[in-house]
Amino acid sequence: MLTMTTNQYDHYDNQENAVRYLSKIDFQSHYLPPAYLDFLKRHYPGDPDGYPTPDYWTMDWQRDKMRLLGVAYAHLMLSSPNIWLPDAGECLDLARRINDQGAGMAAEDPAHFGLIATLPLPYERESIVEARRALDELHADGVGLTTNHHGCYLGDPRLDGLMRELDARGALAIIHPTAPAVLVPDVCEGLSLPAFEYFVETTRAFTNMVMHDTFVRFPNIRWVLPHAARSLRCSPTGSRASR
Image (tube, rainbow, N blue to C red; front, top):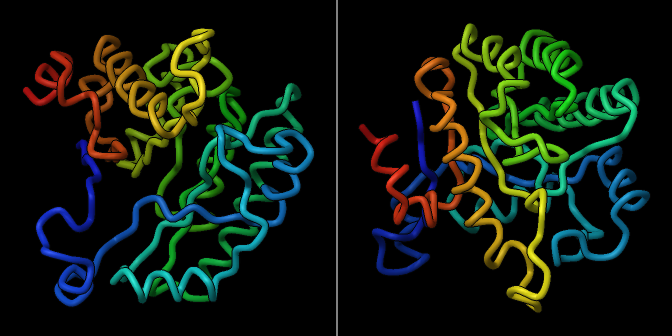
């Protein structure tokens, strides 16, 4: 199953009407658990993907924003750049600490928050281990996947073992764009990655998944594709997938 998230106010005249009539679910409520914030400061100082890392985030702040926007339930999920370390064991340990902290936050208010687990991709074996732990022991709502993990794109056969695990569970898998594996020099300079590359990257990953029959071979995974699929709407691959 594939869901494409879109602008939450598309069918309303203004924000006030949207808040009044909708009880929305935020599928990508980006949060900053301490382990992830420390990782970003160590490995991504400055402005990863063109935006500075916020230095302030709390559950109370999140609740206030949810009330303002009429959000009834939020899936807590990391944003780009997500995590990667050259050692698979260290990457797994980082994912575990992040998920433990996220599960603790969600447990403070389970009626309004749930965890989208972080996986130590592209390390498939470690990711399967953590997916099982997060879904079975931490009761995560699902897993979060970026369009590529250190150059390994969704749809890559190297991830088939993880896909089989998620498919067997009918798991929720939420995709988030990240920096492409290769950036073309001297093109669109001055634009932050979310302003352009994220949309192309989402289409690239989705197309790779279609070309490798990911949705056909693993039909029970409940996918959420971000940002209304963006340029996928203009792609013949999108038409193929819809059929």
